[in-house]
Image 1 (cartoon, rainbow, N blue to C red):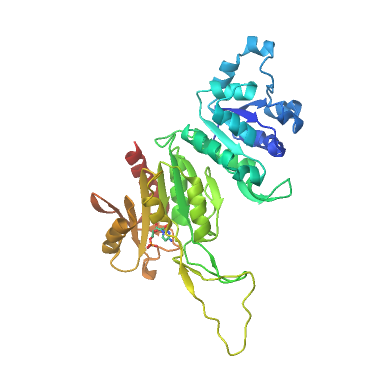
Image 2 (tube, rainbow, N blue to C red; image 1 turned 45 degrees about the horizontal axis):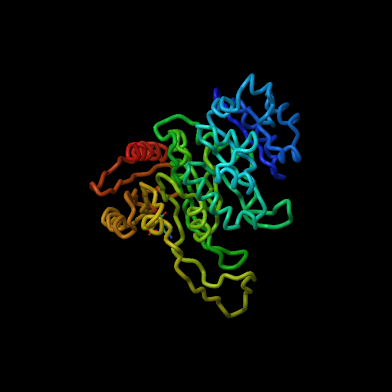
Length: 397
Ligand code: C5P
């Protein structure tokens, strides 16, 4: 899948550098060639020898290695790749990149390159949440640098939160998304999918019947056409799509945060069946069964993710697509929904039980835009996804 592609892998100085050894193997398994570069600090965590052995190529470390300058200048080294991956992208490396520093081989290559750059941040949670890191990431995003991760979780430093480097396969998926050829090459599309689970207490939750099949098919179709896809999914049954960056969430509130973190994007497709309400005050203790007494649940409204993104003043994706799953007056409801939410298109479908669409393999949709209503014939969810991806490609062209 990555045959003939070359990745320049800049390894930064963080404990997560060990994951780069596996990353190199995963990239090479898929046919990519990897040119490794280690910062001085990276060499405290992994050795050039192990990196070179796995890459099957020389590991570069020093800007002033004259032999290399004669064989391959640093400018050339920065240009031979189809993609530059910076992993782990430490707080220091991000700051240097944002500030345009070029005082070692890694930063000089990053300044000299004209190929796309994918950063994989990894750092202590406080460092990640520091305003300076936020500024640097915002600056780099504005400069066109792409990001994958970080994930939240236990950290080597003993703290918990965002800052863990993405796993090698998540990075490979992001790399594949960026390097795949097709009409959506260079476009970033965010897709939400699946149901959300809203807790009643720590062991019970409210859910819906969405399988995530249509959203998954859309993510795969977009990735197959070359898009870099961020796939934000609730706890869906559908097997996760290939070739995309997957973000797993549970609740509507988590889905909104993941969507906001996934922006900016050229387009966003909101296929998730987000719960409209969550249980007020769902706490940390299990509700006890009391004889003769039924619990009463109070609900509060969930954020409307589609509406929030559609109505963003700054950073709204150029194309926002919502879904309308209806059981009555499908088209009239969907036309009104498009206006109310402020999205560009609505993909509407009838999910009455007799249609067999919810949880089934087929779909019969209507595409509603400013131009009017198009009725698509009933077809497999994969085909709906491919046709929708083609329309998205045309709209973003
Ligand atoms: O309002 P309704 O749920 O019918 O709208 C459906 C569309 O809105 C879908 O695209 C769904 O993904 C999105 N939605 C959302 N956040 C919500 C509710 C719905 O993004 N809280």
